Image 1 (cartoon, rainbow, N blue to C red):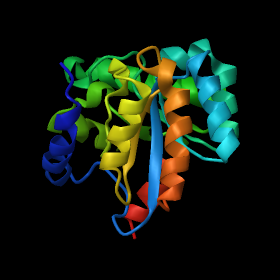
Image 2 (image 1 turned 180 degrees about the horizontal axis):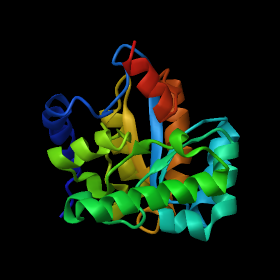
Image 3 (image 1 turned 120 degrees about the vertical axis):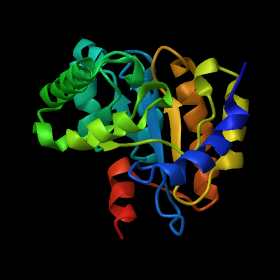
Length: 224
């Protein structure tokens, strides 16, 4: 069962209920963010990077620590291009299913993998997106206590179930608005199509006047 039609309604309910998260950018700005979860993947991510390079677009990547440790040079290459990087957990485990100790360990291990691969200070990797978009109020409280920034979404085309490139592109174009925070995947689930999806999406979004920003840019705009 595909849940794609439900995500716009979930966003409308959850966004005002949990204002401490980044759900989207400034609704008065044409800036939007492309974000990619579950990587880096040794095959799908380089294909995606070729598309982003072609259009000189900066995106943001939420990584699994285990994948960063498998492909540290690829992770470093992504960061050096100027893309934003964040935490998606060490493995793809829903945060509410983890004990407090295991959650903290997962976040710290992923943070360590990223900062080691990209040669960054630990304090610079703070953005966290929960796997499967699942969280509880307690999860958010812990993230804030540990000085992380929770990042969610406003456009989720459910690309990981691979409904087809054209379907994913159409879903994004139907839902995109000023400040949209778009979630796609460059990992094992959905990554097969991510380069093709992105290649079709970018020119359509540019034609509509949107400009691409990183998640950090959206955080800065949210403070204005």
